[in-house]
Figure 1 (tube, rainbow, N blue to C red):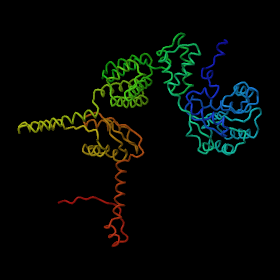
Figure 2: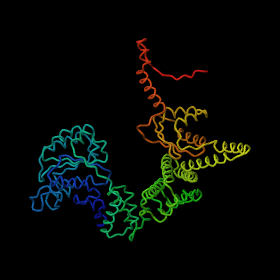
Figure 3: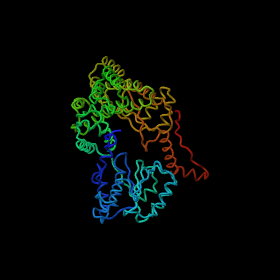
Figure 4: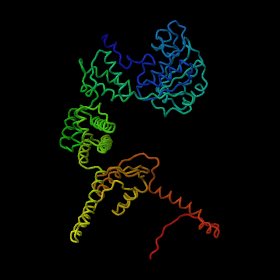
Length: 534
């Protein structure tokens, strides 16, 4: 093994922040901790939470260094800017400090491990000012381990500090959180992460174009550590300037230009060209799921540019595509691809599922949205009314016959669940009607999407059958979308609620009071509406 092999350090370790000011994208956290140290308002326990790679453990270590720093002359107090040269700082940096103990809760989850830690708390610090315990992935501790930690965490010795880090704050008991100060580290914004990468590239004496850096920052999803890990991989691709295409090959992405061109074919309805492009990319080894996610990413990017009017981050091909697209078209594309991604994940053959998604996309791209159809119908109605006023009796009969043909399948954008259930009964779709009434809650219809909340279990074929039937009944393609909505109720629940209200109202009426006076044991159990034959 050569010296160069042994001396290599991953960028995530090499460029780890050395003081709080170097934490990337966490300005609020940094300011709060600096003020706590400078004003001597330190808590005995802190919980740092956030996604992977945003600086939770680094923050705990930096805080430990600041609290135990002795200064260059050995007489300093707690500081937000540790000197890095005193014995305490050097020991912590080299991970040899006896006063700063790191515990990996992922591997030491049991109550015995925590009891050993608690016993250690009784010993005062050897060299530093505080005895500091950094518990990483604290949510991995067992319930009994958390319980064992509670008392010590509530009333620790004055010299003891606990810094806990977790990616899953919901798994940390409330009793632990209530005894600690909680800090939520946010995802690092894209622009800040990209600037951070650019500085590191410059320090490394390498060249990566701005589009490549943007791709790395996007793939990292707000994680500095992930971004630096990808950057290390990218550095191995080429010796000279690294292009966006090099980054795409490392990430397993299709070339961005190819993704935009494929999307252009989809919106234009060019199914043959779209399938050929996909098959070419698939043959090149592009991941089907990655390609679908990239399509989704570009649709989101175009949607944001359309809504905000900010096009600075768009490529020339994206700007050209943007001019022909509306927000309803883009939102429909988003829903189609999102649903397609779920199908791809579940399919035994992902390539086949992707091809079906492309075919469906091209088919629906030719269809106008519901608002447009409604507007056209309105205009048609107005023209017909005007024509009927001026028509002769013979023309009048012909016109009426024509109107009946055109309006045999009216398209409505405000269809209610009651109308769908009535139509299902008319078509003898009894099971479908029953599930619509008792198993799902209606949320809304928007364009050609029917949004429902699943309350009870429905057959796997329910969604497909409902879409198929509604398309046949109302003369245009419909898409069923499952959503979460706490206030939505099934039609059965609505009827039960209304029945209870009617019962309560009637029990307060004079009529019921007179019945009750005549028959004290009478009880009102149900109100029925009955029709009397004439």
